[in-house]
Image 1: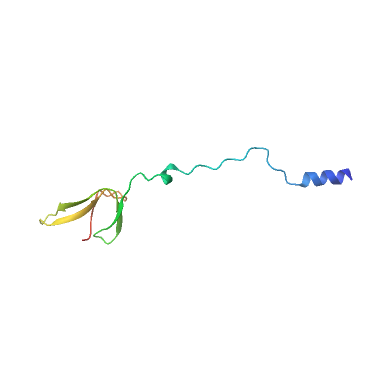
Image 2: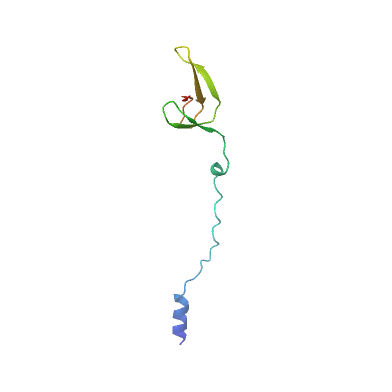
Amino acid sequence: MKALTLALLFSLPVAPWAPQKLLREPSTQLTHRSKSGRWYFAASGHAVYCYGPVMTLPRANGDLQRVATLCRDGSAVVPLKD
């Protein structure tokens, strides 16, 4: 009878003795937005997300063109569709 009881006790799952790991804090990159920006429609037909101001620059032929500055894809200046 004692052998049966001991076999039953040793076959039961045992909780680990080590303390449980705490959940990690979310990355600060996800919780805080470092820059706010805006979506624009580029002259190429794509949507671009830019952080800088929209400026009006002269073209080579003398016309003016609106451009968005400091975009997420690494472009400094992206021509916008009017």
